Amino acid sequence: MNDLQKAILNILIDVDKVCRKHKINYFLDGGTALGAVRHGGFIPWDDDIDIGMLREDYEKFLSIAQEELGDEYFIQTIETEKKYYQIFAKVRKNNTLFVEPPIRNLNIHKGIFIDIFPFDYLPKNNYEKYLQKVTDLISVLYKRGFPDLNEMPRNNIKYYIKNVLHRSLYYLRNLRSKDKILNEINNIIQAGREIEGEKLIASYAYADGKLAFDSAVIFPVREIKFEGYTFFIHNDPEKYLKMEYGDYMKLPDEKDRITHKPLKIKL
Image 1 (cartoon, rainbow, N blue to C red):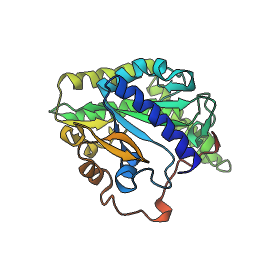
Image 2: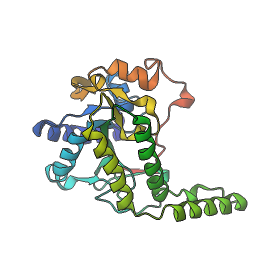
Image 3: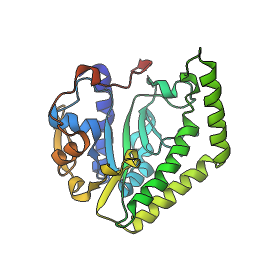
Image 4: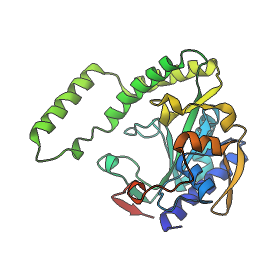
């Protein structure tokens, strides 16, 4: 493990303690789950940790996490940080830095972190319409939070002007506050919860309906070793990983070994 991996592993260890104490189910997700199964820990080039929770557990965790974790950490959500526009939470460590390009000019907490993704049940019927509604609202939210004007080629003034005009028209069509958009998203999700289905979807996957998992793939969670520590993972991680990554035991080409490419790190 490198120093960054050790530091974010310590965040996961502390989160795991809180979850066990309060009987909150969570599971290693995404590349972290892949690393646990394929490498017994971090994917060597990975620089983050992802965990998932059912919406009910996610809300319970957020209600007690700041008090339980104390001053060493900041629970970053769309409610706790005015200029944060993600619909999942980050547990960030205070007095550290992990500055990624999309947030370099945002006045938000930029400490090292782990991601926590809520998972929602999909309605049994017409879930494609449900997905589209949530996806559209999330798109509005993200474009407000990450205009990306600072990423445009400085020598291409036509492209710059076209992009500014496009975004200006976009905002005029979507004159809704962040809170109103968030409430709309939550209302749709709550409606889906009332009609509990057999499939679950993560907050990061609404735009991709094929990443809806049978609940039996995820629950009940089971334990797995990760860098010598015991955490929780999906009930059927092999099936999950095959759906998510295909031939997940095959290492990607070096050019495809992607990291966050942070601009600045301070541990």
